[in-house]
Amino acid sequence: MLVSNNHSTHLQVVGEEKLKKLVAERPLKVYWGTATTGKPHVAYFVPMAKIADFLLAGCEVTILFANLHAYLDNLKAPWELLQYRVEYYEEVIKAMLEAIDVPLDKLRFKRGTEYQLSREYTLDVYKLSSLVTLHDAQKAGAEVVKQTDSPCLSGLLYPGLQALDEEYLECDAQFGGVDQRKIFMFARKYLPHLDYPERIHLMNPMVPGLTGNKMSSSEASSKIDILDDAKSVKTKINKAFCEEGNIEHNGVLSFAKMVLFPLLRGKPFVIERPEKYGGNVSFDTFEEMERAFADRQLYPVDLKGGVATQLNNLLEPIREKFKRPELVELTAKAYPEENHAKAAPAKAEPKSKATKVAPAAAKAKAPVAKAVPAASSGGYNVSHLKIVVGTITKAWPHPDSDKLWCEEIDVGEAAPRQIASGLRQYYADASNLENRKVLVLANLKPRKLGGFPSNGMVLCAGDEASTIFAEVPKDTPNGERVHFPGFEGDAATPAQMDKKKIFDAVKDQLIVENGICTFGGVAFTTSCGVCTAPGMDGKFVK
Image 1 (spheres, helix red, strand yellow):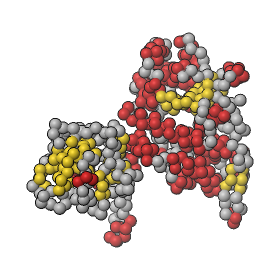
Image 2: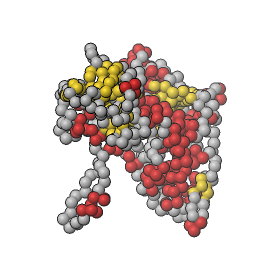
Image 3: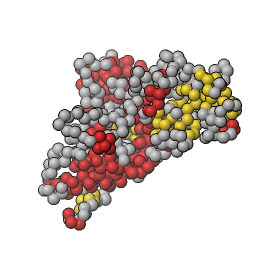
Image 4: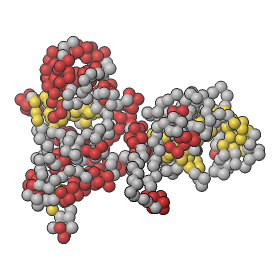
């Protein structure tokens, strides 16, 4: 059987007779694919609940991370971020399945580029392109791929690639949402033309967002992120549309139906209420809850509170797992643009001549705006900083200053650079400097500090009270330039710069967040990982 409990969401099946025949003979081979674009949100629990049913029923399940599809879908995922996003998706999905106690021994993960770049697959793409009409390609992708008046060829290829995945993943059935129906029908029409069999297609209903539309990564108000904190989850649910007695257009009620009840697996849904409001109420089935809401025996405030509590219970182990430093690092690398958005200041309210605010009150209410990681005054951003990895090969005290160390640093050039650093109050012994990997700002104009010629600056993290070297992944080669995903400008222009004009223009955006050195939330990134500053959260990289 495919359904392991009576609370599973309803599946639409195309190819039911073939399904019955196969499951009577052997375990079904099912594939589910997801394009690694926006961050997975809680609606992903709908397919995860069904995948759990498949695994518990003995099916062999393949999860495809469609990284190539993600790139083709209107360039929603930049090529340089695909690897990180695939890794992020895998970690999130494993955590989700672990949170609902699903055995993973019959589950495998595949990346699209593992086979979609092969000679055989490429030839099949060409064969398929000679058969598919423009009309059919556009129609198939209408619900999935962004449509325009003048579509890119990439979006037209998308349905054919997804159809071919069924053959190359050797599945019996493809599983997806009902929004995939047109692509599924496309596959059933065209695969036989390549002498490949029709597959079975299994479809879940879509989860309405909190605004009443489809829950989407691109509509922040409509979705709850897997890693949203408990307060954010409660706030988003409290703001959701949930009209008293309305069971037709109710995102909160739909979420309870399609996500929470299936994952309770027969346990009652308990809503906690104070005794003065009737005390706790429990529902064994969604139908009971729906009737109570329709009859106005269950009010929106209670429904929202119960859904928020149940969802936070589900998300808590996932949030805890993603506090691990390596997963914090992975998240920052996979979605640097979300860190940009978090750093954006709120729009200023228009001034009103009719309202006067006392200076002291205005000062108390004014929010502290965090700088946006983009062009600052003068048009500069972090791409104008040439930050490279180096190793301090020699260090000695400056003869005329008790604040400075003199250093020779190998930054991959023909000769070591000489740099003076004001670190004597933090590092008292040369042994604490020598053989240490460091970050060097390498395109400053040379200058003399206490008469010592200094050609660059070593980056540290902290403040006047405490300062430490930024930590560099140990295997990063000397001379490698640190990069910031999304900010890949040319540091050679200008080749040498006035620190006041550029470094000072962006330095307030160089912040340590969750132990990671960032430019407005975008991690200092090398080929071997990201740069860190343990214990310096909220302090400046300087």
